[in-house]
Amino acid sequence: MLQGLFGNASEVDVQKLEQELGAMLAEGEQIVRGFRVIRDMFIFTSKRLILIDKQGATGKKTEYHSIPYKAITHFTVETAGHFDGDAELKIYISSNPVPIQREFKRGTDIVGVQKTLAQYMFM
Image (cartoon, rainbow, N blue to C red; front, side, top):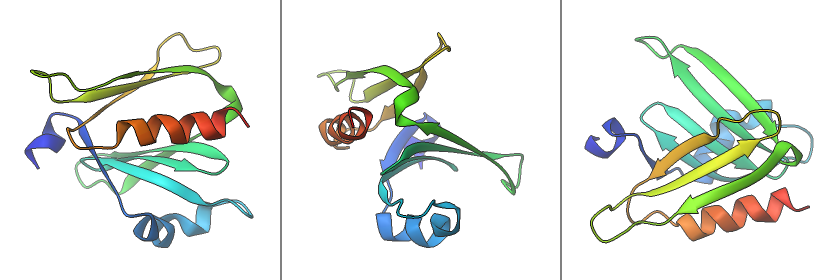
């Protein structure tokens, strides 16, 4: 919980995500990986990146932001250091100079996250 309060993400089981989000997926779309930051989620599918923002005190109001991989111009990954235990991912979307930024706690497969993003971004 403490990690979540500081904005760190933890990986979520894909089967649980498919149960929760399956109705919103397009025909043939599959969830590849997902990460949770407190109540918000960062979902990689075979067709897009979905950012889920739970809003308000109860979290019942939810914003779903879909980003097709072709809209991603580039991304950066900063791996965890000796004293700074968190890794960071920045994703730059065309026509938006401000990147989408997420921190990942130590032990998260940041290389796998980078590989997943690259795999779908370069299709």
